[in-house]
Length: 464
Ligand code: IFM
Image 1 (cartoon, protein in one colour):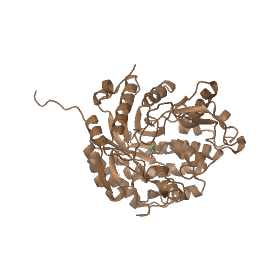
Image 2 (cartoon, helix red, strand yellow; image 1 turned 90 degrees about the horizontal axis):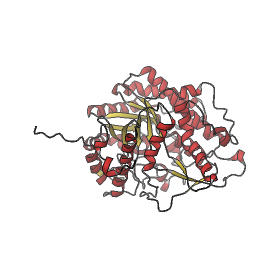
Image 3 (cartoon, helix red, strand yellow; image 1 turned 30 degrees about the horizontal axis):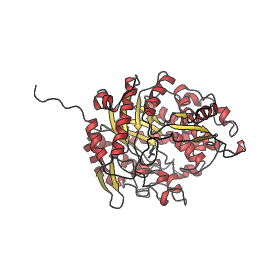
Image 4 (tube, protein in one colour; image 1 turned 90 degrees about the vertical axis):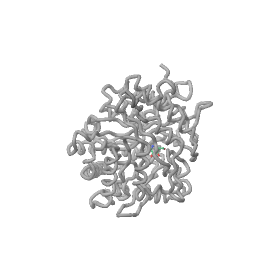
């Protein structure tokens, strides 16, 4: 069945009660990096490493949301969203990651969550969007099992402070990035290029999710749904031969199944040892971990941006024992004539529908799904027709998945406003609202107005 933007890509294609929202993350918008007792995170450290981020940029000031949040909440109200996904900065509430609590940090998030509720906007709270307290990284970071235990303590602390606002809890954002991109590719904090360490990080992030989810469930009310957000990128062969098919399968393992199999099926992927055996004995897997990790979720968050087209390639490191975990004999290619975003990312809306229907097919009993991120990057045009086309086509794809029977409950556009795009710095912009970083002036783009119209409830005819 082909679903076009015209036939299902309208508000009417989504059921009553569908959640419409926008998303942000603490380090990307807050700024105030050294204020009110916040401790340093791995991103504060990493962004100071020469060459680590474009133009040496950091989240020191970002969108200054820490001071301007009431104005940013006005933008949410003006947009008409029913939900706002933001993240809590672990080092703002626990400057050393554990032990000493920074009440001023907790107060900030309490004020924010209370104000959202007062405006009739549901908080979707991500507990970890990559800003590990530096003190914990110094002690081993996510390579170390204890970090998962500290994460659960931190989650319980945040729940005490804002659980009364009945948020949806998202334990982790994109553990693929915080493990493989951070500990294997080194493109993100903490900038490591490791084999075993990155795989241990991936596992300990999942364990941290499971431990935190159990604590939240133990102490929270039934009105605080608990989930996790994964970045899903279908890996498809970029060529015809069996070697490319095998390459796509390895990439699917690295990016997707490494996380979905333990979480949603309570098992490790069948090819995990085959692909990663040369760099790790996987000794960080302990008895009982899978039960913790696979405890039922109230929802799954899916972030979708693009598909990956994989072809077989030589390993970068000939000695298997010295390979980084991302060195799996795969190269990605862009399909000929591909449509691309303003940042050159391949645009394939069908990949969102395939992701959602593929999850439902592979995992019977899949929990309800929220698309917790989807968005378009460019250099900051105010008349951002490329973003409008991207969002419209991906909403049609989400509607297509609904038509296929997938229980999709919500859609969050990334992002409310332009922000610090990690290693790419401020030049790459994903916002519905433009931010002038020199003045901090916010200007809604054409896509802001378009999204507002798109999600608006159909008006009732006042004359009966
Ligand atoms: O900006 C990021 C976000 O932090 C995580 N998901 C992808 C976005 C765009 O790259």
